[in-house]
Image (cartoon, rainbow over all chains, first blue to last red):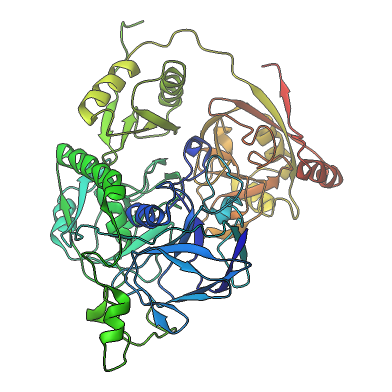
Length: 348
Length: 243
């Protein structure tokens, strides 16, 4: 076994996987990755099952170090700088950290969450079939809490095989699609206001819920309903009229009316919107929402066929760096936004 | 008895869940229909349904949209919800010890005053009722109970407390509750129980099922401490009794 040492991480870093299902009737929320597509891409690169456990990183920078042997890793999700020692390395490509080498990830740019997958996965004791951290319920393995500097994960020693990259389709930057309900009839014309307005995500958002800032959405009959069940993407509107989109660490039931629900195909894209950036919602029919769910499933299942040998059609990073006569390292996948790593960087 | 029951409202909760709503208010008969549909889906599984969440007034049905579409499942659930219940299973009944007042129930005296009752009468009425677990939600093991004595109904606190202890026994509005984990609570805190309704590494992990009956009985603080220690080591410290 090798060890992945958590050398330095920000607060929103935890082991997550596809989630913990089957006990919502007892108040146990599913947890799991905020962006399942990014989790699946990282795992695919590392040769793991799609929804196996990986390290979910929030917007801040982080450093991990290999000990007692080499480790194969891959990072997908938010654009950010990545370095092994002083050398830039690409995201969306597997790489092997030699014993003693450190991977340093910069703060996220334009998105929020990244996934660090480790070849062979994260060994742990599943609780209700999942390693995902749910700190409130005391669940998660190997640590039932967010990761802290100094934590160590026992992981598989890297096996000898070629590295690979993955070609993902361009992400939509269109509106976040919703289906109205279940309590849209509690809002009357305010549903139009909700759909016609620009929204921003508040900085006080977390894995339980994203608070939205925008016009006040008024209820027709007050803001207390008798609690009923929630889903990932439920958009509840509390008394102050500022909606909250419920995320994977949500309460399983809630007592505020829910004006609409983000469709399952868009919840990961929604989770990646940083605080302060304007975005809009768009209502779609149930037929279109379920077609989008099938399209997302097809995309997830196409990931293995999207793996490539690095250096083929893609940029050859080493060659690019060697050819860079100015001597400034350039991340070919993020060249447009490259800037010196700044560990005190922005935070949504 | 009518051949079929009134149709529930079938409401979309996104593209992977349906809310089957029997009432908009807290309603005992609606909750019985929720629990009956929930049992029916457990005993006769419907293709595509992945899990269910019963609440006071509705059943949330999570499903896999790759296996069944909204229209088909909605129609199916509506039809199932209108079937008169076959024979009702006898509910399990739990006796749950509670230490009332003092540091265990910091709102006991204030609540008694607000209800114009003595603390003894408040305890006797809270412990004198038979409750039903109407739903479990919000956080693991948080059990919402119906059956509160109507003379104990009191609006929730204006300022919810952000941290209340594990095992808190509160009342709020027409509801009683058992809060398992420490966390926020806007209800009136009458006491604490050493019983864990959720405990990982214990069998069963979740003690109560929606539909179970619950009765409370008072214990002294000294006994609380002993049973709390036993519960910490995995003992259930609640009793199943014949209903």
